[in-house]
Length: 260
Ligand code: F6R
Image 1 (cartoon, rainbow, N blue to C red):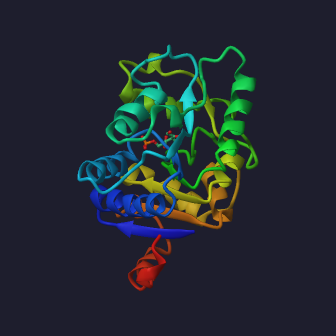
Image 2 (tube, helix red, strand yellow):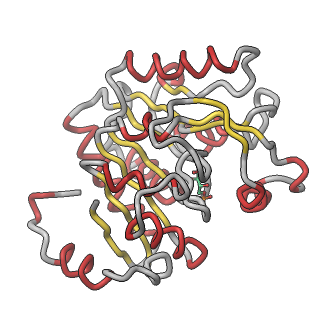
């Protein structure tokens, strides 16, 4: 696990975009794992401006969303399918047919979750998965207690997550209780994961998953077992890390050819 402490969201967005740009140049049909929420927005902004500047081509790329609410009507502005479209895929030349999300409106959710797993497998798996982390340590919507080997399935949101996400809705009553999410096992299959966390409200979760034990109570801690996990944090989110100075030293002295 590599922890990179950066001054702010602009630098985080640029560094993550560098990794995605070099992937897409190397492998034009790359499969990107797309998160929603606030954390990835600087990455999407940066990728959109690099695309507009003419340097980046997503025409053969694929995108797979991490998760989706259950119970929002199709086209709801806060459904993750819409958020991904608005914040990223509509702003670049990725083909709409190449952008997928778990179907939270399916009648048979179990079958839809299996179909989602199959669709990821059919394109060869996720090359680079963008992640945020919840204040309770969730990734995707794998809340505390999630099986560390879980696959895409329905989950119930913890009340704190509903409160955290109420800012996107008119009222907390409108935040669904259920979601479908890639499992921790699904996320762990991605070849590279890039997790972004910013702000003091994430400091405890970052400390727990980076330096605490690997345990289902903090789902993101499974990333300690990932062979290629990059954690991009600002100073506030890094403020509780015991080994912050070591992470800074390591990154400052990293050979340039290594990239992320
Ligand atoms: C979003 C997702 C969640 C968020 C997490 C942090 O697709 O899966 O795990 O990444 O809740 O959300 P923000 O970035 O809004 O703090």
